[in-house]
Image (cartoon, one colour):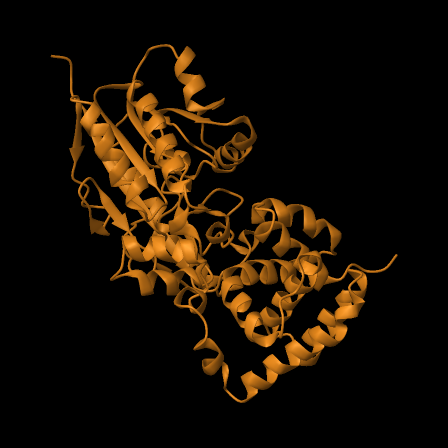
Length: 438
């Protein structure tokens, strides 16, 4: 049996995301099975990088090809994207990147395009060798130069014009590896010493007191005491959620959109006596269970949507509720580059409606004088202050509390952290308190 072609598998992955709207994680999960273990890291690199810079290379191809590739020959287009990414961003030898991409055409039954693909890739090499890419870039739109689809580019500029260039630059970088130290098992200072003893360079995070930034990202299997639960992978902005809830001994706490369980575990590490319930959809709860087991923590897990849970709960209200709601994901696109291609006009309004409904449901579960923390990994006001403003206008028993300890930029109803401007991913936090009975 012929060995599967890495370039062709990568091109299939890009096509499934760009043309069919599939998530990158799910696509890679199936496509990676076609390759041997030694090729899978390269597939991940090409898939993530190709999606990260897709809009840029798509714009370049319009200049390098005399006439557009026909729709039925789209695999040729995606193979060219794969080849361009390898030439510009990977250490693959130039001749190998060209030859392997051309070779993939036979496997894709597109042998007619060998001359086209060879010519385009070699022309791109000549332009790079002459340091002439700037002249090609000059013919691209502003969105293409920064490697963003027009819609997403416009949304970010509308929301954060002054900060947009830093956001774009950060969003096109590979994400850092940030760890949360389990304070029940060690201290940050001691874990940093352990990393140093293993010759792993790391730094303390700027704002999270429990965070460790690993200078060179690596598989978690290479991190000392990871399996024993000493640390978890969690972005610095996400680590700032638990302290905002002012957790106390024995409180009843609900994590209403809990998967994959990072914040559930962070709250239990901060206060192990909590009576914690984690709620999420059946297909998402496995990650919560795995994280709790690795860390040696206990929580009640309910595999259902929050709306279903509210129908049969025991009417015993919760002292604290965390709602990290589904959102556009615009603050984490460096980790999930497919997001920038999968979001469409109308999505923000759809998310905002879903977020409002979840917030309404959660509010009915909160005890008098309790606190609810509303969180998104979105950069867009429609999903953040816009949702909170609408909610507060409907609830006289809800009060917005200032959030200072999360850093970032103060908004009308919360705090906004921006990638490239602040450490960590883009996050929004709004803290609400519920008035006691009259």
